[in-house]
Image 1 (tube, rainbow, N blue to C red):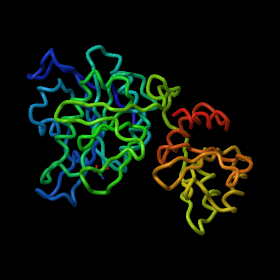
Image 2: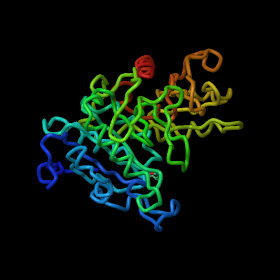
Image 3: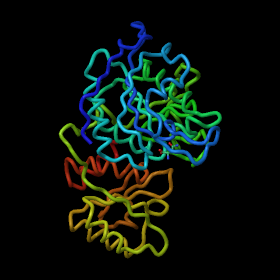
Image 4: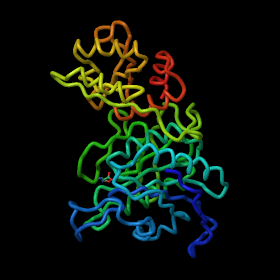
Length: 345
Ligand SMILES: NC(=O)C[C@H](N)C(=O)O
């Protein structure tokens, strides 16, 4: 999905205020742009409304920042692909070079927002604030949550305190790190959390209050460069469970350059899977061991992996480990180097 350089012009707006910061809004779709039966929260079409409708739904947004909207896509986030990720990264990395661009907001469906936020956190080359948001209720629902989420995201993107914090997610008045944010509820408006690590801070109206920061490498400190890539190495996830057929790993090896195992507990799997992981290592297909549990850490474990045939994921959930392994594979297939990245990022 190659997107020509979009027109981003802040001064064209009749509300342009030279005192305020300039924020680019990159719209990708999701429930925040969803439309359905008046007042209902179910049975709507995500990614139905254009970016201008979303901006118009926020009262007095022009008092917070000068906004310029770019429609990157208008999709349910299940249909976001790595091509969209590469497009977003290129757009942000290019626009961030402009002196008149001070921050970015991405509107996104919530179902894969945790993946997009981690990918961008690893590949964006700017300290300017990048904030991702969405909503749980469509724009047409009673008490739609999109306008407040968007208002607070624009306020955060225009806030110099948000610089250098990596990609952030603003949702239901919380500020979360793109690395650790996770969707934890299928329908409630307060659908995001940061597992054991606490959120970075809170939003109250347009004010930001920061309390912590992520210690893991991101953005300008990260080693990944996607500027010349048109696709990412394919990495698949295998979910372990009682009686899980090890043949699934054989199949995944035919379509993947690397495999993530969502293991049980601290990232464990059965003896037939242990043998299969040994075969995969011999075939030069790196396997990363994660847990199907969404908090805690997965470490080197001689019981499950005496010959160190797999790489422990440290604290990443499988869908985020998949992104790091894919980016790692753009640079190396070396187990030691990849293992170091899982401790650094
Ligand atoms: N709340 C949402 O945004 C869910 C929607 N299905 C999406 O991810 O696009």
